[in-house]
Length: 515
Image 1 (tube, rainbow, N blue to C red):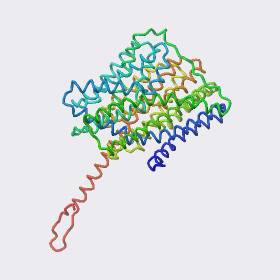
Image 2 (spheres, rainbow, N blue to C red):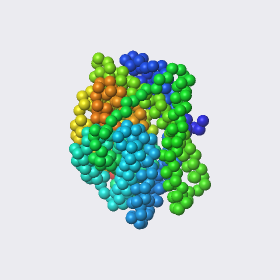
Image 3 (cartoon, rainbow, N blue to C red):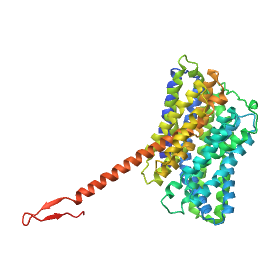
Image 4 (cartoon, helix red, strand yellow):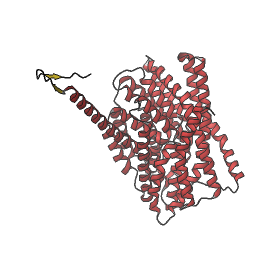
C-alpha cells in the first residue's frame, strides 16, 4: 500500500474507532440492535475508514491544487464584470450534486427536490461571488457576517416554522466533502496574490459566506410555499435477516453513490480542464498527479458515502428510537454530547480544514487544538439539539444568542480566528451529521411524539453554530498566551540588558550589551 495512503487510512481509523465503540456499547446495553443492523453499521464503519483515507489523500493531491489554481487565475482577472458571474457559475455547479444536499432535499416532499437543490446552489453561487468581491476590495469579514446574519434573522420571523429549521440546516449540508476542499482552496487562491497584514485571515471565510447563501435562498423559497403543505416522510429501517441480505443491501447502494459522486466531481474536472487549456498550463507530471488524486477522491467518496448512508443512517435512527423509549429518556442529552464529541473527527472535510489551518498559520494553531475545539463545540451542539427534541423549544432561542455571541467575539479575537471559526461551522456539519446525527434526532423525536420538522430538523444548524464560539474562544486563549509570551520575552531581554558588574579596579559600572 502507498505509504501516504496507509498514513491517511490509519488517521481515519483513529477517528472512526471511538464513535464505533460508542455505538457498540449502546447496542450491547441500553439500545439492543438487531444483528443485521449491527452488521450494516460495522461494514459501514469499515467503508468509512478506507473511504476517508482515500479521500484525504486525493484532496491533498488534486482538490486543493485545483481549487488553489483556479482561485489564483480568477484573482488575476482584471475584468471584474466577467469574474463575478464566473464565480457564480462555479458555485452553482459545484453545489448542485453535493451528496449532503440530496439528503436534505428528500426530506421536504412538498417542494420538488430539484427546486431545493437549484435554490441552494444559487445561494452558494451568489455568495462565492461576494467572496471574490470581498477579496478584491478587502471588505472586513465580521461586518459582512453581521449584515447578512441580521438579514437572516429578520427573515426568520417571517418564514413558516416548519421551514425554519430546514432553511438553517441547508447552510450546513451544502458545505460537504465535495464543496469544502474546493471552495477553501479557491479562497486561498483568491488571496494568494495579495500581500498585506490581513491576507492570512482573508484566505479563510469563503466557506462561511457560502454557508449563508443557502439559508437566505431557502427562506425566500419558504415564503413561496404554504406551511400546511410541508410533511415528513418517516424513516424506514431495512428488514434484513442474513449476511447475504446485508451484502445485497450494500451492493444496491453502490450504483447510487457511484453516479452521485461522478456528477459531483464532474463540474470541478470540467472547470479545471478549461482553466488548464486557457491559463494554467501545468506540466505533464503535475497533471498526472492531479488525475491520480481525482481518482483517489472519487473512490474515497464513493466508499465513504455508501458506508454512512447505507450503514450509519439506519443505526442512528434505531438508537434514537430505542434510547428515547427508555423511562429515563433525559439520557439523550449526555449520550448526544458524547457522540458529538467523537463523531466530528470522522468528518472528512474537518481533516482538510485542520491541515490547512495549521499550514497557513505556520503551526501557531495546531491540528490538535482545532480538533479539541471542534469536538467541544460539537458536544455542546448535540446536547442543545437533544434539549430541543425533548422540549420542543424553538431553534431561534438557541441560534439568536449563539450568533450574537459569535459575532460579538469577532471584535475581540484576531481576524484569522473569526474567519476560521465561521468556516469550521460549515465544515463540521458534513455527511456524518446528515446521515447519523439527523436520523438519531429524528428517531428520538418520533419515539417521543414530537414534530420532526420543527424539533429534530435544526440539528445541522446547531452543529454549524457552536464551533463559531468554540474556535473564537480558542482565539482568545491564543491571543492571551501570545501576549504573555511576548511580555515574558521582553522582560527577559530587559533583564539581560541591565545586568551591572562592578570593576574592582576603578569601581566603574559596565553595562553588558545583549549578544
